[in-house]
Amino acid sequence: MAVNNMAWNWGWAYGGDNGTSVSMQVNFAPQMAVAQASLSGAVGDGLCMGGITQYRTRQTPDGPDQDHDFGWDSNFGYTPVVYDPIMTSVSAELDVGGNGQQGVMTLLVWLWG
Image 1 (cartoon, one colour):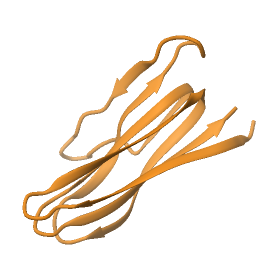
Image 2 (cartoon, rainbow, N blue to C red):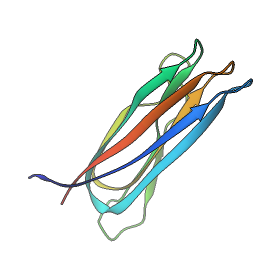
Image 3 (tube, rainbow, N blue to C red):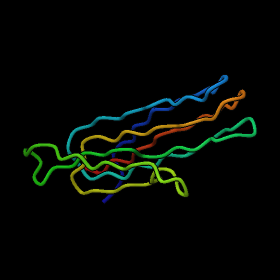
């Protein structure tokens, strides 16, 4: 089975004085998918971490969405990769610290169908 499409979203966050975050989401028709969040740039001395915060799946292609949420782990952050044979959505978050910290993150989804 080959990849038939890709979808993505990206975000930039600037921490200013207090830190901030940016969220991104990709939605698609129910199908087999792998999603990966990757940091592509970081500037400054503070926190710059991100990853997947939620993905949605279905038991059957015409069934209801089921949410799978990930919380922040102080040693790990958020999970970087998820897979499911019937996925419909993926959300990610990039968190940066204050004092001018900046970061760029991409959420990339490979879709099979």
